[in-house]
Structure formats: C-alpha cells, structure tokens
Figure 1: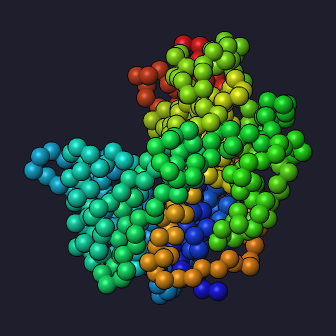
Figure 2 (figure 1 turned 180 degrees about the horizontal axis):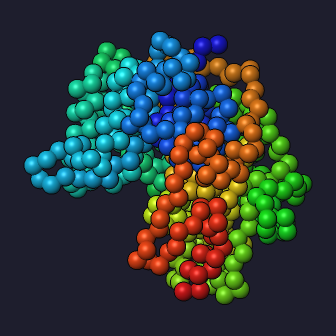
Figure 3 (figure 1 turned 90 degrees about the vertical axis):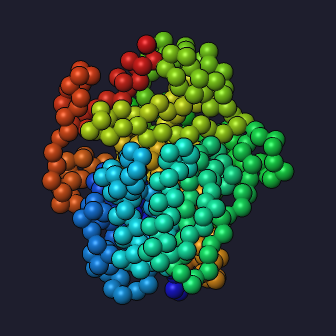
Length: 442
C-alpha cells in the first residue's frame, strides 16, 4: 500500500510525526538537534530515519540520501522552527540572524521539492511587530513557488479532542498548481465550556481518572515504570489512549507494547508543607507560593510548558497539581493531557520527559491538520497491516553525553549563568525534586 511520505523538521520527541502517521503518512525522516529528543524519537519511530543534526548543516539532498528515498516525491515537510529575533524598523525580521532557522525551513521545503508544507509556531508571532515577520515568511514561501493560505489560523488543541488549552499558529501551503488544503474544522468544545454547540471534549478527570496513582508504588521512587493491574475503568478518551480498540490507532502503525506497565511515572517527593499548600488550592486556581495550577476535574489543563534547556539553567516548568491528589502530575499524566497514547514513551527522567511533552505539538491536533492535507491530495487512506516493534529501551534512559555519542555528536557540558549562583553540572545530575521543594517552600 502506497502512503504519502513526510519529513519532520525540528521534530522533538515526535508529536507532529505521530499525528501525521495517524492521518496516513509515512514519516521517512525526522531532524532534531537535541540528542535526547532524537533518541526518544528513534525509540517510538524505529522505521524513521532520525537525523540528530542542525538543519543548518543539511541539504535536501542530504535528507534524501540519509532517509534512502532517492528521487521519490516528498509529499509534505512539516515542523516548527524557532523564531526569536525581530529587527529594528527598516530591516527585515527574516534577516535577523536569530531567525536563520526559519529561513532554513523554507530552504529545505524548496530543496526537497515538497508538494506541501505545514509550518507551526507560537500564537505570539501573529500579533504586534511579530506580524511583519509572519508576512515576510509568507512572501518567502511564495517566492519559493508555493501558494499559501494567507488567512492563516491559530488552532487550539482543545477544539480537536485534547484535554488541554494549547494554541498554535498553523501555516499551510501547496506547490503552485496543487489543491490547497483547508483548515480543519473544530470537532469538540473544551470541557467545561458552554460557548459552542459542538460535542464536549475530554476533561482532566476523563483523561487521568483510570491511571493508577504513582504514589502507591515504592518502585516509582527509583524508576519510571511499574507493572500493575490496578487500572480503573477508562473513559472513552482514556480507552483511546490505552489503544483498546482498532480505531485507537487511526491510520497509524500498531506498536507492540506492554499495556499492563505504567510508564513515565517517576514520583516527585514533595514536602509536607507543599502538600498542605496543594490541598488548600481549589481546582482551576493557582497555588499562590509555587504558582502551580490545579487541574479542574471537569475542565481542561492549562498549557503545559517545557522549561529551559541546559544552556539556560535546565529548569522544568511547573507541572500542574493533580485534580484529586495533592501532588504534581507525572510525565505520563502530562502525556495523557497532550494526547500521547500510553505506548508512547518519554525519557525516564522527569526533567527530560516533561520537556519532551511540553515542546511537542499535541498529536490529535497534528492529525487533524494532516488529515486536511490527505483530503486535498485526494488520497483514500487505509490502515496498514504491518505492526512495529518499539526501539531499544536504552534510547529512553540514555544520558545527554551518551545520546550525543550515539548520534556521533561532540558533547560539551554547558556552563550555567554564574550570576544566578548556578554551578556547572551534567544534566543527568539535576534533581527536579529539590527544585520543586525550593519553589514550593518559597
């Protein structure tokens, strides 16, 4: 069966890759400079060529060669290049060196001669002086031979069956002469909202209610996974996350996995002071000392954040407080709120795992966008018969240094800001529990 093929740039752990696969694409290559993210991507997508390099060092020919696709048509290139700089009046924002990765995205779309592209980014680039940057980007794509939907949209994942409010700019384009894709219509209204006649989407309780409480397992103090039979009755949403039906896989490849194992659930040891503060925080409110948001059982999560990388201090953004338990949610619970199914594994440390989820596009949102491309291409997708073995578990427990060696990259530990009193240390030595306790205790 012939499936259209895609290339994921700035792929992270693979939120967009999963959504595009579920819509019917074969993602043949994923480019990600962070070796920890690249390793987890390789674990979850063992048939995808993962290229742990900067896009600045790659050409379209390089990607074709490494992915082994030769002269095949690349149907779509997708991804979210970071954009940070905005030049002074009189200069183009795209000429700012800090936006060079965005220009590389356009360059690789052109060099791969992709039929379509999907560029995603933060909502912030659609307003104020950032808007000029977006207009310039559209002009770059037009100059490269692509028709672009100039009435771009900011889509909220909560409108596509995700129990989290998360808005992303989606910019789509087609090679001149090809049918333009339409933006996907919303299919749900956010749980707890009465502003739309659409079916209500999943709530935090429906997303997390069947998961065993991580604090019942002593083993999860030293590891991120445990075999258990103590699963509660799943909601319709949780049933899909558990992949209990054929429809749960959509048009993606079935993974061979162990559904009785609770993964990505390493515990955080909160102080009693923290727990008392969490207990006093009403659902939907923010705990005043730590600034942690408490999930509303019948509503949606706030936007989950990734935190910083090693060069900027390596701090994990606050994970929300569970709606029922007086603790922060686990990485697996973050993944549930993001639309990642339970077979999908994150790095086994809380810091890296949370960073991977927070950086990702929710797969159901990516699937909705990818499905609009499938419709524009006039393809009738079928479910693949092939199933896939997940990769080597080493890839989700690997250190930054070893991940760099695995992908053949030089590793140089980053020096943290001396003015902040932080000291140089390896990422694997960072203990998030200490950081959470410091914040929660003021």
